Length: 410
Ligand SMILES: Nc1ncnc2c1ncn2[C@@H]1O[C@H](COP(=O)(O)OP(=O)(O)OP(=O)(O)O)[C@@H](O)[C@H]1O
Image (cartoon, rainbow, N blue to C red; front, side):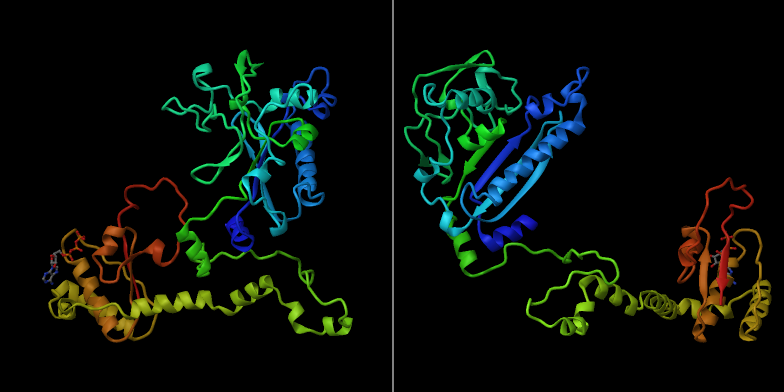
């Protein structure tokens, strides 16, 4: 989402750089103990790799090696076997955009450097930059898909000059010089060279893939979408990051020429999104609101026509219990009653009559049971743990005490 926000503000990225750590970096080698192996020193690898990433970041964002930038972002990823790599996305300032495929040539190359020109660079390309090999030369390479093709489309076709592909991504200049180099016991030519930047490869001495796509054109629907200024992302509910701070230690912004007293006396500087979030939670009567909902729920339980007549149908024993309980309820004195009789003798029938009588007179009658099945046969019934938010601790319960109990509270 953050990257989309950057793209929305500054436009599409111009360059994509992947830097992979090199276990043979001198900074790693010289700090290994004689008994150490690189793979056993993730602490050292991480520190050195971080230093390299920081240096690359400085090259890009402060030394402006590709020109002035308006935005960049990077992520660090770790392959399963631990190879750390950093992906950088760079958005160049309009003035520095590379608007023709030809102008990419100065930034990236996808050919073997000529031996006599730069021996060191050539050895680095052979060491870090050659892809795979894959395909017939090495069918089990990790880039091979099920259809026996390389997912990065290597070996690439030869090209006399840099051109734009059908998808408007560049087809890099990879001339067929007939020159082959022996890498990983295979003879490889320019079709296996991953696009690289000579300066960065020379400086960082590691796998460093540099792709440029300033020139990528947008499709007509995308162009129209952007011209209309339609939003390219939305999320519901919205998520905001709140900047955390201690009490009274929030960042404030003010104009340099503002009098300090004016700043200090401005009531707005005491407010931040975080303080207002706390304030909102203080004001919002969330607990009261919940309670009000519960009361509303209980008061609006509909009593069926059948239940309204129940008290008139009670048998002698039921009526006796009914009268005792109802008298107690309407006398507004507390009381507790335990109804017991064999199954099917009319206990639930009695409870429903009691609930109806109390509710029809405007009382709140809570019907709870220890099991959901029993609760479901009582009008407005709920399990006791749900209604009263009991916290149960698991323990061994004897058969006698596990029988379902019904509780009516008025
Ligand atoms: N006074 C009554 N008049 C008509 N039908 C009744 C009366 N009392 C109970 N019944 C009916 O008898 C059946 C069993 O009653 P009820 O379900 O209330 O028993 P119970 O004691 O709660 O049973 P259990 O303990 O198994 O849950 C129900 O169909 C109920 O409608």
